[in-house]
Image (tube, rainbow, N blue to C red; front, side, top):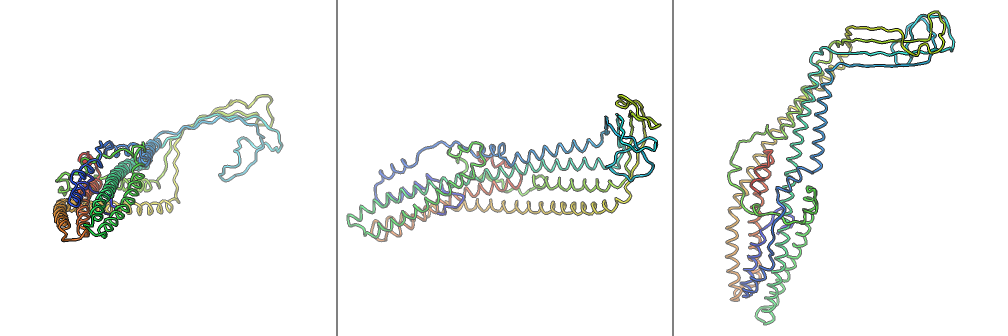
Length: 481
């Protein structure tokens, strides 16, 4: 028995097997049957795999991260659409400044304040009040498709984020279901290991009685002691597997205390519904992984179109209205009092502003080359994802068929092991064989029963993986409930 195996045997069936072996060895039929019934308390499964998956989908942090990324992508669409709106800027200014002015030209810069008015030939520190208030509206009537490409890129980013949410939900759901199966297997392994220890002890007592009566050699009792010690080792490993599996499952639960509940295994210890793997039709383009990659291609294509349309003239309709006030007269005199604190002279202007960055072509050409390479990479990645999904589908489909074939064969092994145990027990009672044969056939029977349960659980696991590759776990959850 491998303690780290993700699947395990049916506890009740294994107990029945061990009880049958003890009946043959000791002859105490009634006592052993009562011991078996007492050791298997009836419990009502409470925590279902559907509840675990649903809890994980609603509360696991990784999904919330993806959902907030989606909300940000939706907000970015609204942000991109605001580029179609006109821009309206307003200003109100009051200052106290000198009025010295000189002839000459300055290059465009953002450091020196602008000056208006005639040169009055003064250079002193006398200051006057100044004020200004105005509005400027700016609107771009057309842009050769640049803004539309940016909106399309934002929409593709939203689709990509939405597909990412679906992919995260699928991955979390699959991981939660896998953790459920692992804990179910580990708990049953632990119960089976404990039952094996208890029943080896019962057999040891029976052999001890025969040894004391000098009907069997003392070596027989020593052999049973060795088998019990090995069973105790497996019990310790099984307990470790339970604790590790529960730690993994607990992270998918909003209430970690639910991990102590019994797991509903009613359907999971049965056969997987037939026919699900025989449908060879697979549409990878409808899976979350492919939808996410397709959105990434669309986003890169839209970014390339936006870059391509960025080296064009910029047309802006502009209109401005403003008023200014000053405490300085044109003859160089300073006006007294509050003159200049309020705008007293107004102007307006309406016009079309056309700009074009003639030397931006080198920068834009480099950006286009970079974005084109990114687009080709995303397209190649989309093809790769499709092939990988097809490979995974074929592999998991083959695994499911193989596990079903194994599950049909393991009952034959169980029946053969039972027959071998009965024969070995009869020969041991007749003194024709040693206790080694009885112990060996008993372990073979336990292993056969374990393989039988493992085969069924492996089939469920392969079914889970197949539906995960398809991108929809609903068929698995319906069958597992």
